Length: 458
Image: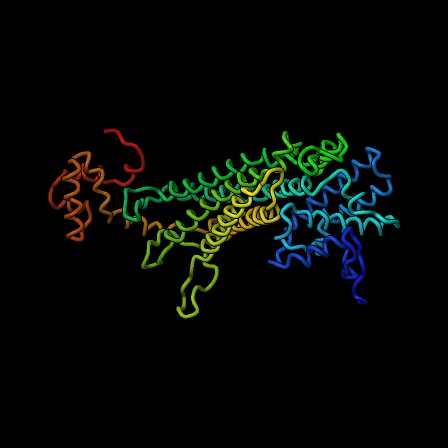
């Protein structure tokens, strides 16, 4: 075939597209794993490139590779790390569970480019993969990629927290009804309500940061089963030191490389934090939909930014599209969490064999949350307006205003007043005044919503 070339590996000859940088092992994986069409996320490809670049430089410094050869490998690997070769990673996510196919994909692409740069053959295993195994490189790359991407997610969380705190301050004097069981409850301010949302996001940031320490432990140096067979005793520590310098993140060798190869508990921990953030985002987004419902037939206590027409049949209808999009993204993140938990259960003996799937779900979840939270911040929360008159009217008409009467008149009598107000279609204040239950001044003071916003002395 004029559009193909022949590559060889230990199993024989394979036809590879003539313009492809990959080799025989990658091509076999492409042909074997036609499942989803999903490929490795770009951050993971970049992390593989960075590991290979740093490894080549360390192997040069240790005298294990000649300088020109090592420099060519490092230069080619830097191209991978920079995202210039993403189209050369065609292997499906659902592949060999160790990530060997993708590690060899990286080795072959880098070897091919390095050969062109050097003008001499570069071997993907003997040179590019020197001192490494798929079993320690792939989990190392997962941690590198995930920890790096979490920086963006934390920035998104910080921005959303700031926006919610700003709204809490802006709405500090807007008194509205609280609601429990979706039924009217005692008054609260809209600012207090938004402060709760801001606190949820703040807690999410704390949970996320708690996962960083374990993500910063790298499996490199364990090679096949954790013993470090076929690697120089200084190799891993030197490479990890370079990775720390290159990323600015405090990576370090895993204290136990047997755990680092066999278990993916760290990804479960990280995904637990992501899933919790997704739950928080769902609660906040759903509350915003409820508070903005109507505008005339629902609560209508806030107005969300109008972004697009909401119906193909009902003119003038505007839907809460951003909260709905966020809730869908959050649901997907929760699904990713479940997949990662299942994957982590399959660390049979010395190696987890569901790593590509777990990597895809983790990085997909991080990206989804990052973009969804930015959207919620920039195109929803920042533009929310309070409907002050609606909030005040709902408070005055609420039967929950009978609550402070219970301290003065007792629970049973206060409940009776609330029932009479409901039956008569009147407010609590009107019943108290009309029936002379309390002196007008005392009634006004007792039924002032502003006195119900916190603890109150007897």
